[in-house]
Image (cartoon, rainbow, N blue to C red; front, top):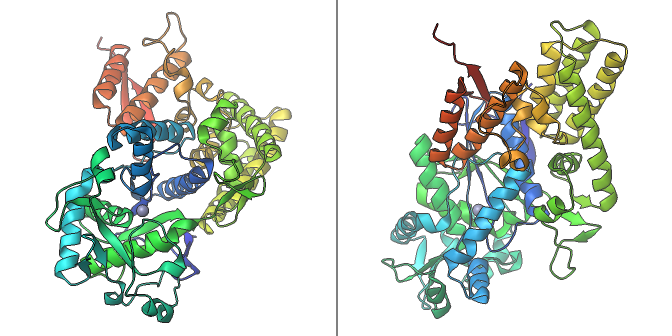
Length: 509
Ligand SMILES: [Zn+2]
């Protein structure tokens, strides 16, 4: 059975098949780095992480792009308020986002473009749209997209086109607006004094200014797709439901008008909102919760993932203290179980455990293939834990197949409590979760007199940190770590599935 996904474009669950066999391109709209991303944003990023991990576990070679919106109405307003340049203001939140992302075990995207680094690509795109008659310079000096020139406008968000035409002579220049205000939208905003003041204005043939929010994603996605895959259609475009209109509708209009293709993305996948104690998260309710709030409260990232994955991504989720406390406990139980299972590993798989593992593989696999039904996959994980605990109680020991099945599903979900994982010398998947806590205190050489297992755990730890460094494009650090490992006699290998492996270099005799 293969993956089926709900496509917002057709409002139906469809069989998933990528454009190029075996390769999947995904674009996920990243955070607007004007402030800390809140836990509702991270609910979206976590469902996207699950989607990516599941595609990879299913054997696809995934190319994932997640942008950082570092210039838009909100970032400029926030920089002005703080009296900083745009760059100074957003940099701190870009770093904060990466810390939160890593803490929540979200895999870094293959490309993480920042809008301000792609201004020339945006200018090219707008210029082409003007030349082809899809865009025009308004009397206010800004460039607008003419929705009347693009008959498919409104398809994604199911807008009533007749109503649209009545208002189509109007224009909208803010980045965010309601469906009722659907009309010609801005591609390039003429520079105002307040934009210049924070360094958010660029020269363009159609006048000095800065990009509108929507054009940013179109330009970055098309540019990176062309560079890496030589195509101009995405397989999957994902985001929160609040992005369907206007953001994704506008992305489609700009991109398709530019490429001449019927589609910008073949599957549009959207995650639902997260509420806090029954209320929509908002400044007005004063209930904005960030990932770092949870971290400071001592919540385990495994518990946050578990909480998110216990509800289907297309259903609203209510975050409560009780819910979090319950998943915290459940995540700890999973962590303890993982330790028990891997430590008890023997040479062969006894029938009872082997059958339980097979059931886990098939139940969790079917669930995730069924429009990413994580709640059912999580239920299969707990069923397996109970069955395996009973087998362990009666003195059975799991074999490599049982343990690797566990590592396979934990590698997709990542819901076990941390703290246990570095004790697992054999588990590459398990070990990859452990991050920041031990980062600064971990010895740079294996402790004297350590056992072979401890040495392997040491090597694995550094191999994982090297992978993180590579993910963050910190190549000098990645090379330094490779050196540390070599001098202790270890070679590090990056596996295709994203895991890492350490191999003892045979000593010359
Ligand atoms: Zn976007």
